[in-house]
Length: 423
Image 1: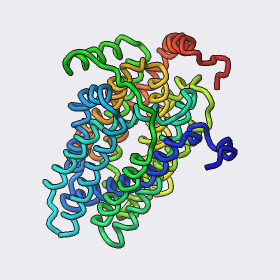
Image 2: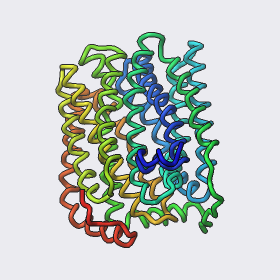
Image 3: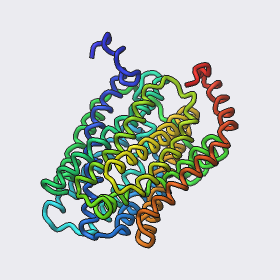
Image 4: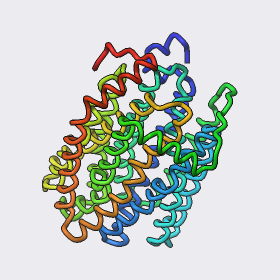
């Protein structure tokens, strides 16, 4: 791309490596979301059980809680570029295996559980590596916040497109082809990673055994009030606010009396909300003021969950899903940006592994809790309780915001960030 044209791009996309990452990852993520909707629909079709939806969510994400701290150590010790190439190849193998089983007609629920567990193990390393790798893709440090925001926009653009396409494909030709397309889509991101060029750099040597290094990361994160608050709020959102993800098929089928296409529309609704939030964050030029968004996000999410739980009208349900997507992305992306900005470089991998734990590692317990509660008290009451919990969490952490803001702004000043533009 000509240098004269770069000025018309968002700051992060002016970096060649980030453009490659954006293109490859964008294609792959559409396939990932197609697989996600196809998996939950296939599980529900095989079992007709809300509890089993929770079990699948649990098995796919529990490795993020148990193994991500070790993934963070791995990321801090080794080359992130090579790590990501390896994880993407393994993820491609997982998707193609799922496709082969589904296409052959022999797939059983235990196959899905085992492959979900395998994908969770990959994610335990891939997620923190991806979070940290973004810092290496931009040519200028000040473009980092824009890169993280664009990542969120890309992720949720795929979240909008993938489920919509997936719902249509499931209805027309079945779940297996969603898995196949996902597996083939990894070729794009692997090719993009291989095409990147980096200057040689020295990876810092971290002394100590893995458990000592993990403990050092925990001590560092939880001794910092801002980092601790972001991690705890993210954990609450993951435990309560993300239960809807495994219960949406129940609402699509039993409550709204729809089909796989209805499920696709509902997931696309949350994608639209998240995409809108990501676009807004991508247009921001400063990290100042993100603390308010971290607090507002769970409030919007909680309201969306309650409205969705009570709705029996598809357009209103779609509006509620839009609020759910918007609230979720504001909390996750804004929290990510603030953490990446204030954390020390030598502990970045470990802190981001804790952040990954807070929203991926806690989510399986939310999935299991949501599925279990729905089995006993119904999906409607389950999501109402989840929405109330998110709203109360937002109110609780909002009381701590002034003190946390003071600490964060002191860190910003030490890092040379201009505090005059508060938007």
